[in-house]
Amino acid sequence: MLRQIAIRATSLAAILALLCGGVAVAAGRETVTETEHVHREVVFSEVTANPCNGEPGTLTVVGNSIFHVTFFANGDESWATGTLEGVATFVPANPSGVSASGHFTTWFGGAQNNKNEVEHHTNTVNLKGSDGSRIVMHGNSHTSTNAAGEVTVSFERERVTCG
Image 1 (tube, rainbow, N blue to C red):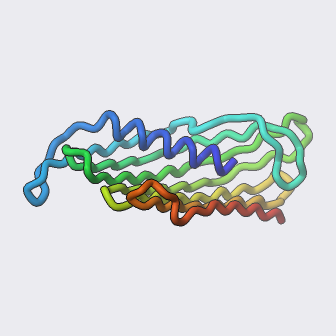
Image 2 (image 1 turned 60 degrees about the vertical axis):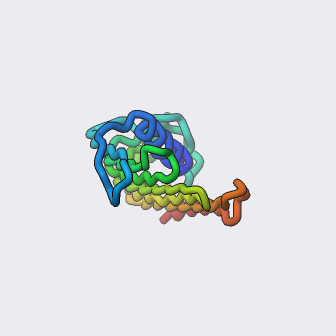
């Protein structure tokens, strides 16, 4: 579940980078900057299992987002960041099963120049079940790459707690 949110956020940032408009001048170098706001977007809706009881159902994430991309026109340096937040719901396949709803927040950022590239991501989903249970999912990741294209640091952590 967390991976789908991260992949969606990163994909939207890449699209924004390709569609950037608006030219500004910064320190004598031409830059291109784009900021996009999206409201009530279905980030994803997919069949999955409740991570706490294994019950099949559909997880749907609907939210608002803001993405910001800046890069130098000569292509030697860029930055991108984005935040998504909104509502997450789990509807069990069995109508008598445990449904859940709550809030999610995702943030990602990335930057590259001729010496390195970094990508960061974090997200949290908090759901309350119809039976009073709580599901908390948290994930974060980081990747650093040097000028030779070698990954120097990389990790991805996901944690789910049920209660």
